[in-house]
Image (cartoon, rainbow, N blue to C red):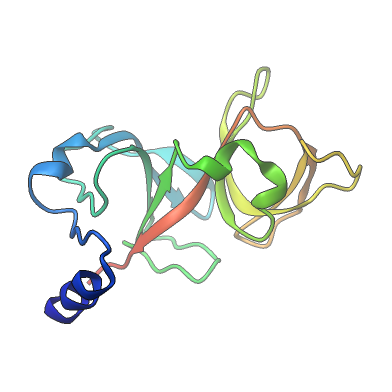
Length: 155
């Protein structure tokens, strides 16, 4: 950490660890468990014990369940998705990124997957690749899209 702090100082870049005064500005919007059966509400939604490593913003946190999931994550890993990310309103810039996608009514639920170009060519639509190798959902018009910004592995 000392080396990173020194490099940032030399380059004139603000250095923040996420711990301390600014960390309280962050808000956990939801905490969910991701397992073989998809997303489920986690016990104790908005739990205060979830670590926030980035300051400010509104975050969705997904914890990988004991039954695991594909995508290269291990049980206990925590995935942080930023709701206010500038890319969230530009689906064409999210191609190839893991995202948490909120669907409008009547489906009204959240989906996790890797964004792909839509089959219909509409820049407001995306295809969503399933992390567990299931079928790709095609031509989705999401209500909100939150890109994956941080993975905290279980130690």
